[in-house]
Length: 546
Image 1 (cartoon, rainbow, N blue to C red):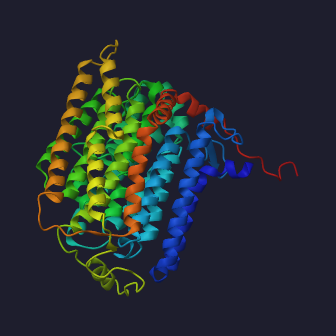
Image 2 (spheres, rainbow, N blue to C red; image 1 turned 180 degrees about the horizontal axis):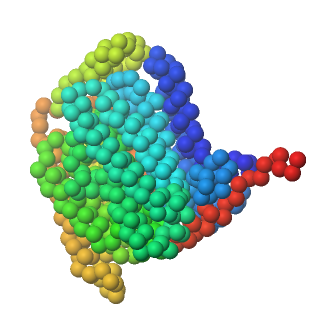
Image 3 (cartoon, rainbow, N blue to C red; image 1 turned 180 degrees about the vertical axis):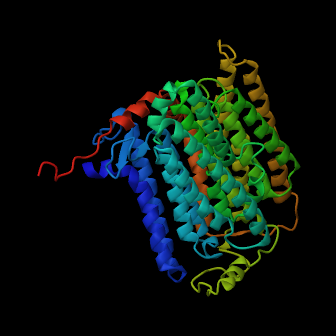
C-alpha cells in the first residue's frame, strides 16, 4: 500500500494515456469496447482525484507527505534535475473538477455524439491526460508539453461531427493556440537561460536573488509566459477566438472545454504564487491584471447583450467568468483567492450544464439533421447497428422531459447569473463582501478598485439575467410550435448530477469554502511547496551497496 500512495499522482496521467493508446489500436470497429474503456478510465481518474484531495487535507493516515503535499519524482531523480509531479490543494481540486466533469461529459456523449465521427474516445482520453498533467506538473517545460497534448486533442474534438462552422472556427482556434504555445516556449527558454532551471520550486527560490540585468530578462520572460496563459484564459483582447469555437463544438465537447480556459487561470495562480517572494514580477498578479480582467468582463457582457445564438451566449458567459476571476485575482493579497476558487468551481459546472442543454433545446425548435450518418459515411464507416439513433431524434419520449429541461435551464441561469439561492450567488456574495472589506484596510492598491469590481460584477450578472432569462422565455413560453424533446437517461443523468454538485457546494458551503481558503493560504506561503519538492529524495536502489 505504501508503494500505491507514493505513486498515486502519476496514475492520473498513466491511466488516460494507456486507455487512449489502447483505443487507437482497437480502432473504431471496437467502438463498444472503447466506450467501456473510456468510462472505466474516467471513473478511475475521479477516484484517484478524490484520494489525492483526502491526502492533501491530511485525512489519510497512511500518507506521510511534507506539508501534506505529494511529490512524485519521475525517473527517480531528485529535484530540480528530474521531472516532478506535485499534488497540493490547488492541483487536487482541479483534478477532481476535471475528472468529475470529464466523466459526466463522457456519459452524455454515449447517447449520440461519440458516434458522430471517428476517434472520439481516444481524443477525449488524451484531453484528460493533458489536463491532469498540466495540473500536476512541477516544471515549466512539461507544463508546455501537457498544454500541447490537451490542445492537440481538442483540435480533433472541435472538428468532431464535421460541418463548415466547425472547420472555420477550428482554424482560428488552432492558429491562436499555436501562437500561445509559441510565446510560452519563448518565455520558458528565456527563464532557463537566466536561472538554469525549469523546476518551478527551484525557479521560485532562485528568482529572488537574480542580478539586476538578469532580473530584466527574467521579467520579460514572465511577460511572455503570462501572455500565453492569458490567451488560454480567454482574456481580452485575446478572447475573440473562443465564442465561435465553443459554440460550434458538439455539446459534450463544448462542456468539457468549459474547464480549459481555467487551465490558464490555474497556470497564472501556480506560477505567480511561486514567484510571490520575489516581488511578483511582471506578468503575474498586480494592478494591470485587474484591469485586464475588467476589460474581459466588459467585452463578455457587451457580447452577451448583443448575441442571439444560445451557444454563443454560453460562450460569452465563459468569457465573463474568466474576466471575473482575473479581476478578483488582480486585487492585492489573497483575501479574494478563496472565494475566486469557489466561483471557479461553480461557474465551470454550471456552464458545462448550459452547453449540454444547448443541443437538447435545439431539438425543441427544429428537426435535427443526421450529422451521424454524414460523418460516418465520409470516413467510409458503417453506422453502429446497435445504436438507437434514428436519423432525426435521440432517445424516447419522457413525459416530464420539457419540465426537466426548463427546470435545469433556469437553475443553470440562476447559478451563472449569481442569483440566490444557489452556489453562484454564494460565490459572488463572498467575492463582493471580501472586496468591500478591502476598502476598509490600509492597502497599497487604490480602494476604489474594489468598488469598480463590485459594479462590474453586478452589471455582468444583471446582463446575464436579462439575456438568458429572455432566451428561456422565448424558448419555453414564447413559441407555440415547440417539439417535446426526446431524452435518454445518458443525457438526463449527467445534467442532473452536475446540478446536484452545484447544490452540494451550496448546502455545504462552509466546508467547501474552508478548503478554498486553506488553498489560498497555501498559495500565499509558497515556501511550503518549495520545501516539499526540494526535500523529496529519490528511492534508494535495492542494488546499492552490492
